[in-house]
Length: 132
Image 1 (cartoon, rainbow, N blue to C red):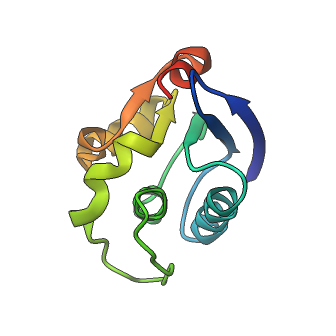
Image 2: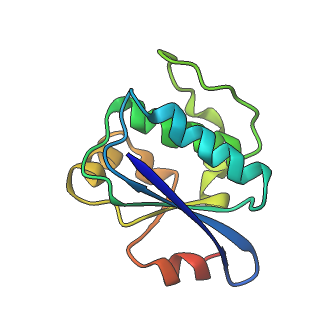
Image 3: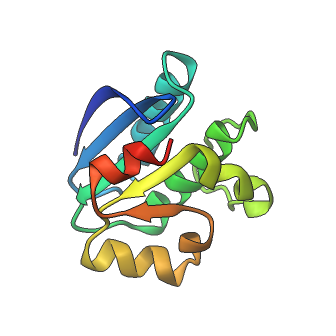
């Protein structure tokens, strides 16, 4: 798995774009969350998580997305392995986090976990940036 980051200008706010390449699973989900936390602390409080090159996501990967939602919603939360997620604070996620271009299996996993209810999902980076 590889993570690339860029800082972009949205319509009125600075936005971090975090492009993940490769599967998100139990072996690397903490790395994904930690990178998002690093971006939250400096420089951007808004995030676009680009999933266009993520071929598969495990339940741990879904937990990573949830943890990112908590971070960007302002809920301090340490990542613990084998932790059951609490989605009670995720409703603010759609204000600060956008998902970009989830494909196939990843899109289905997001739908099955009902995470699509908590996030705005875009197929185009420019459109996602303009939503901030």
